[in-house]
Amino acid sequence: MAAERKPRVLMLYDFPLHGGGSGAYVKYLSLRLKEAYHYDLAIAAPDEEIVDNIEHIKLRLPQTPVYLGRPGLEGAKRYADLTNREIGELYSAFVQGTIDAVEKFKPDLIHVHHVMVNSWAARLARSLYGTKLILTSHGSCIQAISRDRRYFRMSRDALRAANAITVVSGDTRGKLLKTFGRELSAKTRTIPGGVRLSLFPKSRPVGHLRDKYKLGNKKIALFTGRIVTEKGVEYLVKAARKIEGEVVIAGDGPQRKHLEDLISTMKLTNVRILPFVHKYEEFLDLYYLADVFVSPAVWDEPLGLTIIEAMSSRTPVIVTRKGGVTMAVKDKQTGLFVRPRNSNEIASAVNRLFANPDLCKKMGERGRAIVEAKFTWTKIAERFDKLYRDVFLLW
Image (cartoon, rainbow, N blue to C red; front, side, top):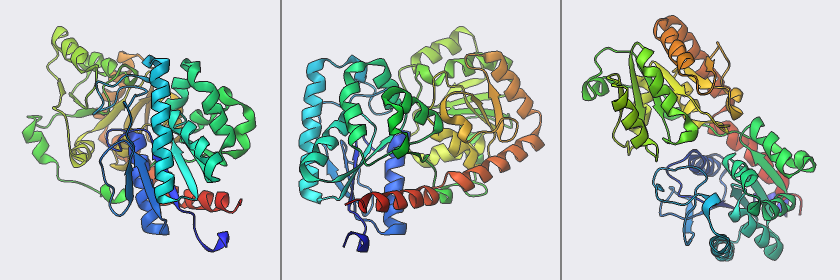
């Protein structure tokens, strides 16, 4: 009987869907599975966002902690700063919310995003209801657990109980196995995030942005994303003094005021931090407007979605060789690598690409080809469809 139907899948997520790459992962994976493979899906998450044609179950949590900073959760505590009591209260709320979601939706399979307190609750639901369990690490959860062992044992138990584990990059896979044990290797697969190619046509009309921000015909180096220490944006700002064009920063976060003060102190006239961008379409316009995209991360980025988005728009990228970025970026083929915390290398790389539009075009086309081959939701959903069916047939 199990082979004659697909499993009902409950996505269990610990953040609002908007504001981060993992939320986009949950949203667009769910949509593609629904559209292409006709899955019965529900998303349980602590927010009000409704994804078209997908049932939404709101989790009521005492607070929504973060791993790093996150747009929309600027005042939230980091997991590392929670008291033991707060961790217990959060776990209790996840347990109640997960049980309510299972009772209401009656899933065959729970797909948990992030190996953290929500995975502990899903582990309990598996024991109580016999549901299958898949855990996905988006990387930042492993970083948090490795720094705070209070989260280790129960996360390890959840991983051991899971029928399958997925990670978004080879770097995240390595960190997960190092942290929790090589015995998890056999059931761990690497399935990255991606983009909807329909949102990234050959070109977009973006001339209005040059007028809006008074950019004229200047070359543009762009950063988009969370403005937090780990993203290394201050090194792009420091590089601006030697960059022969404009630096445009679109994002928000706790380091924004520090960057504004740095721009003032250095008396930089070619750096602008845009007002908070609310609409995704505005971010897309910026990718097409930019001549290069810069991601100067100083931490092990699991696999930056903004990098994949820039490549989708045929914009060459300049990145640090941190984390899972090497899955997508090939040095001197789709972009350039620079050393972390090295403003001189950032400036040199930006100026090199500014001065060579033919090289930019070639890199942009190669980047787009890599996205089409590896990082579309069509291909990613195909892999999850197979994984779900393989796990479901384990009854």
